[in-house]
Every structure is written in structure tokens, then in C-alpha cells.
Length: 327
Image 1 (cartoon, rainbow, N blue to C red):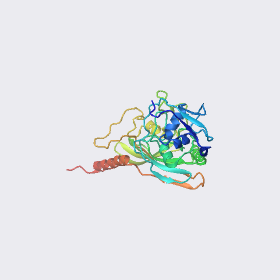
Image 2: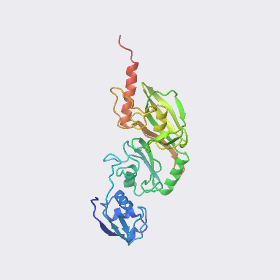
Image 3: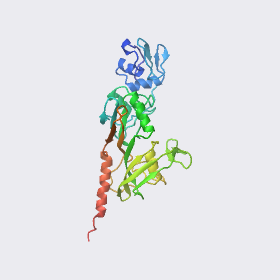
Image 4: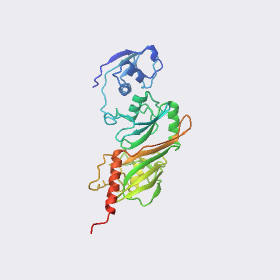
């Protein structure tokens, strides 16, 4: 059960026009915004005897609010304890963040606390809900284990403009991927449609019939014995697109426990290689036009330490193999 007792509050007149979840946190600072939203969605908050409809509902001022005790769903945190946002750019319209691996983009029924959107709201204040009540500021997303660049909208106008830019493929995205195997080509387009896997609803798959159009371009940056570093530029933005497409040509990401290639088998790591706790995918580049001024914006962020260490090991291994054998 909830550790917070039922209570009654009255909305002060100066809060007229504000969101219900924001008002609840203002009236009781111990009541976090995510907890307020959870209580509202659970039907545990009433205004003048009427069950509140949604967290974004606006108050008029003077209303009596009751918050009732309720059973809380079991959830897991959306990121490691103590996670802080690394902000690369911010202005009044948007922010660009270098997301660490292991941090979820936004909350869900089973994930609360420490997600990108929650951390962004804690830093910037209320964010637009264009993509849904549980996705403040979110206009695109990265998988939890994918590190790198993500843009947050700070105004509703910016959110609508950025969502449209992503939908119309006006945003340039570059990922760095460390994959198993050595690609046959220096560059290639992968144009296989993607849809839900018929056997696993939580996974995506390349489909021979149906599915949504998906286009991914890659260039081979470096080749190693049994591995390669790729620069990947997805033209479309399907769920798990880069991971699914690379696995479909039998070059799955190192560390990917879901999409393992055509045979679906786990690949064996070389002796002495650094252990990776996540898949080797990093959103390294992002370019788009500012939603208000139209100014071109371009951002890059380096490989994080874990992927950098693995790449260093591959380069050292390649150098060792190239040395002449002692006679």
C-alpha cells in the first residue's frame, strides 16, 4: 500500500489555470510530480467530489481536492540512482542531452523515476505533453541501453515542430555501432520492412510481407578480426530499426541479447575482451533546424567509456595480430 495517507487540500486562487499535477506538488512538496500523476491515473484524486480525469487537467482556484490512499503498482527505476542529465545545449525552446546507457527515455506503467523526461522536468520545469501524458518533452526516443543524443522540447510550439521534423525525415541522425562480423561492403542500404515479430509481441522483425517501410544506410569505419565499427544513418525511425536491420544482415550489435542475427545464437566474445553490459550502439550525431529561428543546429558526442574501451581493445588486438611472429 501507499505510504502517503489520504488528505484534503484546497487550491489557492493564485493557482488558477495551472495543471492539477503541478498544483499537487506545490501544495505538498513531499508529493513528487510523478507520484501525483500516478495517483491521478489511479483514480485516487477527486476535485469537489469528482474523480480527476487526467494529470494535465486545469484547476480554477478554490476547489477542494481529496487524495485517497491507493495500491501502487510495482515499478522499477528508469535509470541508475544519482543519474544526472548531461546537457549539451539549451535555450528557451529545447535542450539537447547526452543520455547515458541504462536510462529509459520516459516513464511507463512499470518504470518510474530517473527517466530522461522526469529528470528533464526536474531541471527545466513543466514540459509539453505532445506525445502523451507520460512523455513530457519527448519528441523522439532512444532504447534504454542506447547512449547518446536526444532532444527535449521545452515549449508546445517547439514540440509540435520537432515531432513534425522527425516524422518528415528532416532530422539527420548518426549512430556508431560495434557489430559482430566484417561487412562484405564498405557501405550499403538496408531496405527491409519492419513490423512486430509474430512469435514475440515485444520484439520487432524484418518481414517478407507487410510491415512498415524502413531504410538504414551504413558505412564501415573500421574492420577488425570478427568485428567492425559502423557509422549508421537511419532514414526512417522504426522501433529498434538499427538493431533489427543490422541483425538481419547477420551483423548484430555486440552485447545485444535480443537481436542476435539470422541464427539467433549468442556470439562468443574473444578471451581478454572487455565485458559489455549493454548493446554497442551510440547516438553520436544529430542535426536539425531550430524550431523557432530555423537556424541549422548540429551536435556530436563521443563514444562513452565502455564502448571506447572495447574499441581500444579491438584496435590493440588488431595491432598484435599484425606483428610478425618471432623467429
